[in-house]
Length: 332
Image 1 (cartoon, rainbow, N blue to C red):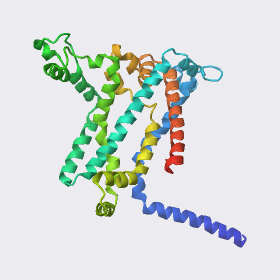
Image 2 (cartoon, rainbow, N blue to C red):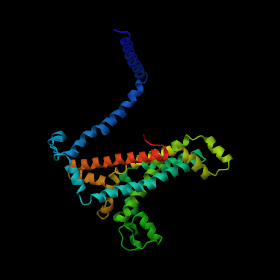
Image 3 (cartoon, helix red, strand yellow):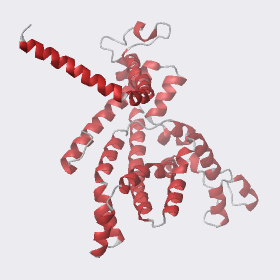
Image 4 (cartoon, rainbow, N blue to C red):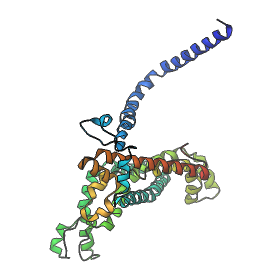
């Protein structure tokens, strides 16, 4: 064996010895990683196998692999999706709710974090932060039940004796004389998006602000002290110091939110959905639920879900490209 071969052999052996020593030093950390790795394998990578159903005429008896292809190119379900008369209305409803979610929740979460960061009393700051994110732990079903309790309306006149049949909001408006009869908020299509977004902001604003609060906690306090000496007001310090230093966090989270525009959850929309609000409340996720589970059309619902994912990938790539160009910050 030549000297060069011996050196290469020792180099390879040394590399593996070094890697093994790293593994042995961090073996307990590796054990802690196992649950996370298993979770991602089961719920993020294994489902890729199910995407085959989008290109097949799925038969439960035959399974996904045994089912025949939908057509020569496997695109029959996608073509069917684009030929549905109301499909673009569902797409628009999904996009509209997602954009409203970003326009309202995103800046309000940043403002809440900035205001909490400005509080002087640490005890009061913790109380405000805790109260603000507690609604996040309330289930969607409970939130929708609360909305029904608050916003329902069963009366057609302003008869005071029938106030008990009204939701709390309608009862208050009637007693104040602001309306003459109860407003059926949950049964009017024009109110659906307002109710959906308002409840979403209430439930998620505190939880969304946690990331910004954590980022603000890392800001050097000497910067605020120097700005105070220079005569900067609290608003100026918030804008020129706080916002500027957490801007990378804001940009990255915004890019991630844009990548979820087509992935609006079906749970709240389904629970708030009424026949009268169908034109506004039917989104792609509820449509997938109805077609996949209620109608048993697994191939079609998988094709629609895959279409959603592809659009999300395109959106996040575009948003990240624009972000890198404008702010020099991005996911990659």
